[in-house]
Image (cartoon, rainbow, N blue to C red; front, side, top):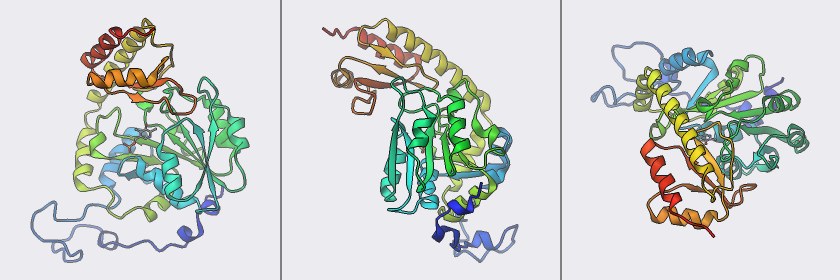
Length: 345
Ligand SMILES: *Cc1c(COP(=O)(O)O)cnc(C)c1O
């Protein structure tokens, strides 16, 4: 796997911005190098641009090396960086499954990169051959999301592997919902497959969506390019410190996941008894996709009662579908009771 060959020429040749924190590392007694205000510690100082203290902790937890991690302002940041690092605007293209997370397409369009959608099967399973058939010599990256958003299902590992092994470019495996899933993470295969980038986030199971911290895991070689292109101080000190503290509360996170999985079972069971749920798709995530006879009508009915779900009626293969996030016991019961009061002819 020749990663260098996949990098845009201007990025390969780029001399990155060298900030004060890059040029001097270590403990100083007099810091007069970064035009900071000397008062108001610790917030007066620029934070560690590579967040090493936090990465050490994450590395231990995830069983990877710190240099295999890039942290961003949510995982949306590494998604955008993937285009900026690998895809030449108006020339290269990206392939992605459809339907999937909307940010891949938005970032492709912002970066003026062709975005090729490859439909999943009717039941949202993955056909590797169909994905590989969409690839041409200008395809630099393939986006896979497992468990997938909005369908909720895990993609078949053997099919994913077929893509990883047969594609000569980068495969992004978005594992935003991995904590809710029964399948193991691709992180264990990071050293084996040099062309994968695994995305995870603190926004879902860890309950930290407002803190904005996402993780990209890849070979040291790929991470070095992320570090070269990202804003120098992309993760602020408050986020670095707070995430670091929250990482010590792994048992609380696990208890939340357990509760949410029980609640997912409850919702699935209750929805099954409702005539308006024509089909409940299997979920390995903290949400459930439900096919209904009238997604827009039910969406409006719920909204009028102050209950907001996601209307996926206009999303490919999701005609009539609503995406319901698993909430607390109380919230889920309100939803179910409200749906029970709705009669559909
Ligand atoms: C929610 C979600 C993310 C997380 O985005 P952040 O920017 O980390 O909050 C990433 N990928 C998918 C598929 C998601 O659903």
